[in-house]
Length: 79
Image (cartoon, rainbow, N blue to C red):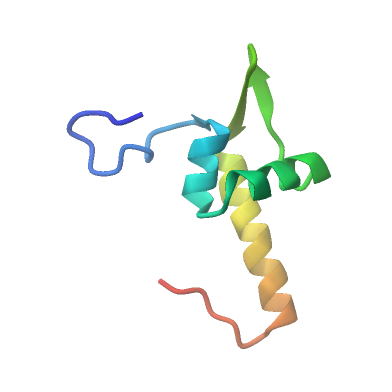
């Protein structure tokens, strides 16, 4: 999905493939599929291709940060 002239080629994307979403979250594809099967992350299909909204990935990451902060009040995300 590289776009010429862009510093971050994935910054303007609206929908990611499973491979792109896993890379964005820095997790394995199998781990991402587990979340999709559990329903902790939403996705849709375009034809036979599964796509995940970037906004959903952002919301998922936010939920993880909140859950972790509740478990470990001293936890601070790396900037």
